[in-house]
Image 1 (cartoon, rainbow, N blue to C red):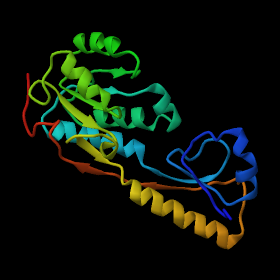
Image 2: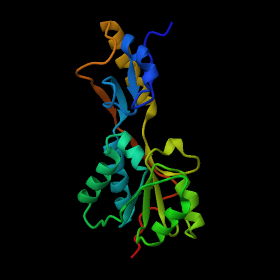
Image 3: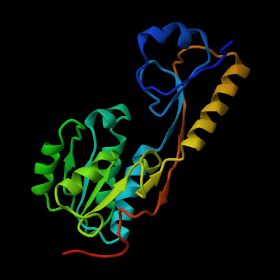
Image 4: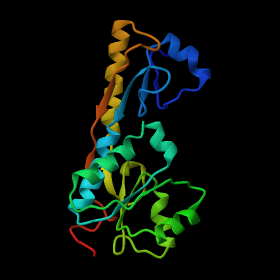
Length: 212
C-alpha cells in the first residue's frame, strides 16, 4: 500500500485530507503553504535573480518579467522578488516592468509589449516566444528571451534549469526520514529543502551585445 505520497501541489484539495493527515507526506515545488507539510522546491527567488544577472552579463539593459500573478503567488512571490533583487544588484539595468501573463490574452500582451522599451523578456511561459514573433519581433535579433524553467519548454531556450531531479531526490530523502521517525500529517514546524538551479545557454539569448 501507499505509505508516503509526494504531492506536486501547493494548496491541497480538501479531498486529500485523509491522506495527508494519516501518512508521511512531502509537497513538491510550493512548500510552506496549506496544509503545513514538509517540502522540497527550487529556489525560485535565486532562479529569477540569476535570470536578471545573466541578462545583464549578456549585455541586456532593460529586462521585463512576464509571469502569471497566480504562479508568482503560488511560490510566495519569490519570482518577482528575485527579479527586483537582480535589478538592484546589477548597475546600469533599468527594469521594463512586470506583465501579468494570461494564456487566453495574447493581444493584451502584444499591446503591452509595443509600449515597452525592453530588450529581454524573462518568463516562465513558453507561449511568449510565439507571441513575440506574432508581434513582428525576431528572437534573438531584436529581443531576447529567458525561461525561468527551461526544461519545461520545447526548443532551445536560454534560461534556468531548476534541477527538478534534485528537488525530487531531496523530497524522497525527507519522506524516508519522516517514515523512519514515524511522523505523519501536518506539522507545527515544517522544513523545506531549497534546491538551486543552474544557468543554461540557448538560442533565445544572443551573447554579449548591447543595444542602445
